[in-house]
Amino acid sequence: MRDRPKKRVAVLISGGGTNLQSLIDASLADDYPAEIVLVISNKADAYGLERAKAAGIATAIIDHKAFSSREAFEDSVHATLTEARVDIICLAGFMRRLTASFVARWPNRILNIHPSLLPAFPGLDVHQRAIDAGARFSGCTVHLVNAELDAGPIILQAAVPIAQDDTAETLAARILTSEHVIYPQALAWIAGGKARLEGGRLIIDELGSLPQAVIWPSA
Ligand code: GRF
Image 1 (spheres, helix red, strand yellow):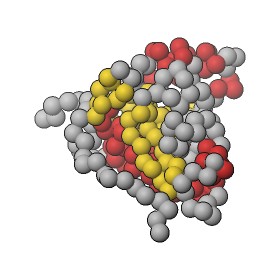
Image 2: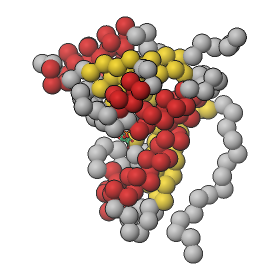
Image 3: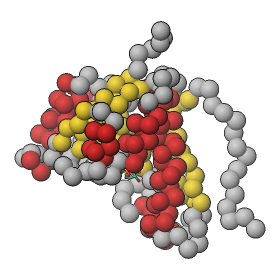
């Protein structure tokens, strides 16, 4: 028998859902500490809804445009999550900002993936901004969500080199590949109780060995 019940996870999406797919795929393993029980999209035509259905996962479409206020939209999302007895929320390409009061209802129980090496380049248009800054690396970050945009405690990051001829599109595609690796790992740590907050930093038990450095450009 398992020593810990699997955490019940809802994934919130607005689009294609490739990160959702990586979480679904990981959660199929017997020893993965989380199961995806619900996918919520604020857009009816999000392809991620098809991915959820193909995996036999319950879906809900909650269109923000159908509500008179952000709070009313979030109340509906909250009720749907509560009804499904969700423990952890994963934002995966969910293009709505959540209010501080929603976040306060789910303290340290919301994860987000952001396609930059935070705290560099929070917000939108991140790939073009990283290229324009002349950065040699960008990457992706999974973090806990707090009231501030893209600023909660960092769980896990991947550093991804920027090629000199990268466009925002080619860089986004390279980074997305790493997103699919780190999101399932980050959720496993949180759902498995392997991470704890210490003064705003997230400390993970049982880390692998520290790489010396990743150097780019190389001669
Ligand atoms: C990802 O790049 C994610 O980091 C960002 O939105 C994109 C969503 O892609 N927040 P997908 O829907 O998971 O394919």
